[in-house]
Amino acid sequence: MSQQHILQVSELTKKVRFILESELNTVWLTGEISNFVAASSGHWYLSLKDARSQVRCAMFKGNNRRVRIKPKNGQQVLVKAKVSLYEPRGDFQLIIEQMDDAGEGLLRQQFEQLKNQLNREGLFDLSYKKIIPEHIATLGVVTSPTGAAVKDILTVLKRRNPNIKVIIYPTQVQGNTAATEISKAIEIANKRAECQALIVGRGGGSLEDLWCFNEEAVVRAIFASELPIVSAVGHEIDTTLADYVADLRAPTPSAAAELVSKDQSSVLKTLAALTERLFTQQNQQLVRQQQFITHLSHRLSQVHPEQQLQMQQQRSDDLSARLLRAQQLYVAKRENLPAVLHQRLLANSPEHILNGENERINNLHRRMQQAQQHLYQQSVDKFSHLAQQLHTVSPLATIARGYSAVKNSEQKIIRSTKQVKKGDVLTVQVSDGEFNAQVVD
Image 1: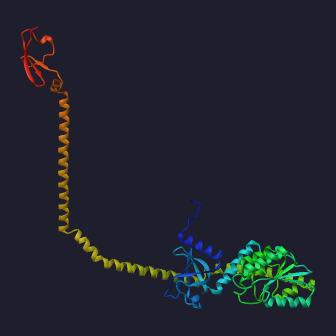
Image 2 (image 1 turned 45 degrees about the horizontal axis):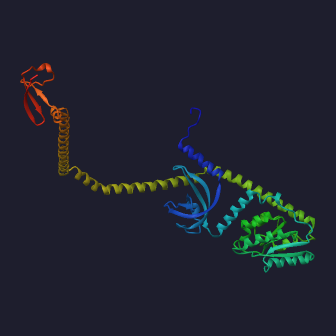
């Protein structure tokens, strides 16, 4: 112990707060608002919960002024927050920077969560990308047979290489069943093995319209495909998880048809591959730089006067709430004091004491009577027992069994022939009386 540094509680909370803020940085999460309080200082305090857990949150007035919604208990929201610790209480909490209604923001959060999960599993690694054949004789297209995408693909192929045979694997590309149908179509195309590559996609639309291409089932079906797949979902600005896992991403269905056309030059292929690699490396570099900047920003924020002021304001709000509760408790105690004193007065009144003493005397009297009765019964039982023992050893009991007692004139028991002589008159006692006898021999 002498060689170890023993922490103060404040030192421990400061270290934990530094670890939380430096390691977790900023997080996005969704949940239901509960225990919402708008403090007089302008800050908001609330809890975010789901079916199994909840976490305390604070949103300072500099940030909550930009919130477009009016928070209320029971509302589902999407927030961007910093993980932190409220040092005076040692409470884990989130410092909210942005807040929106769940809606589309929840879809984007789900997109990012699934993207990060699949990326950790390696589904987006370039090492798994298959090369699109340079000369394709038969091309498969997984899309809606009545949509604009299939018409654009057929138009481009007819213009660039009409010799390419096209097989349509019809599916829904929007709605609840679309993801299942797209996955099944990819599996069917692989089982039939009647084409050299697949184009999977549809025309543009909103995030909800394109959501089936963000479903995990579709992403895993593309990853498991033995046929190389070109994703062609929406417009150039639209990005889905199918684009990340596909062997090649085309900005539009028409561009996908151009990429797989026979007359596409090797320069364009090389350029597309280099562009994809550059895009990936740039993103990775940007992510690393952003993480480094965020880390430095968090370290700087620990000594920033604004954050210290916010912490003190939060502590002031906490102390104000505790003072209010203490005042309410004091008032309640003062209101109950007359009743308490009245009860104490009644407990110490002479009448109450006298009644108690009378009750105690009555109890002692009953106990004395019970003790006397018990002692008397014990004496009777003991006397009966002794009488029985006396009767057991009494000569009368022996005589009653057919024996007799012989006495001389001095009323002494005759136990030997030496005690009598011829002519003596003796008294013989039997069970029902006595008679005299004379010694004749």
